[in-house]
Image 1: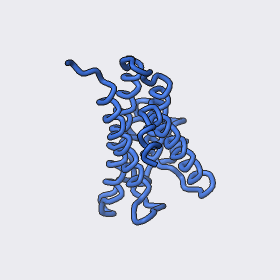
Image 2: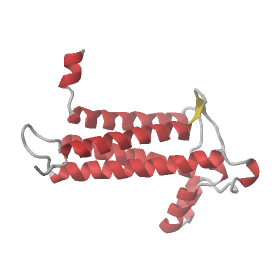
Image 3: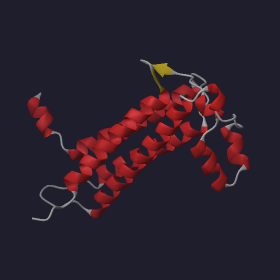
Image 4: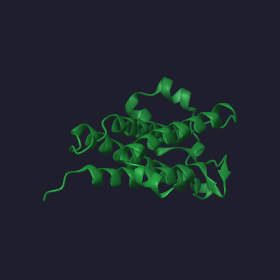
Length: 176
């Protein structure tokens, strides 16, 4: 077991990050299409953050550092992109959790469905509505072990943030 752990390198982590994002997105679509849980605007933004993190991990895996060579700028840019996407995901999930914990009288009014918003709003307004969330985002429709879906995604995003920061620290050249 110890030999296996020593054989793991950062590029295994990049692949694990990509595959875990694929699994999270598959779970989100399972909840939507098999369990009929309608995603709110903040859920959709969290899906986009997960997709961005997955693409960043895939780019880092492809551009991974080769034996005894310095890390390429492509790898560093992929890790910075992944880190920024994960930090954005933490912020959105945290906002979503905040909305869910508001007293009922402070919850913003429910808005129209996501499909309607895409069809009717210009992109700048759509982004604003998605980032603010609405009363639909305050509904708790699923929980596991006492944590709601945005609380779980926040934990994943924190993990991705820490992993991307660690990888970036490891590949960034240091002055000697």
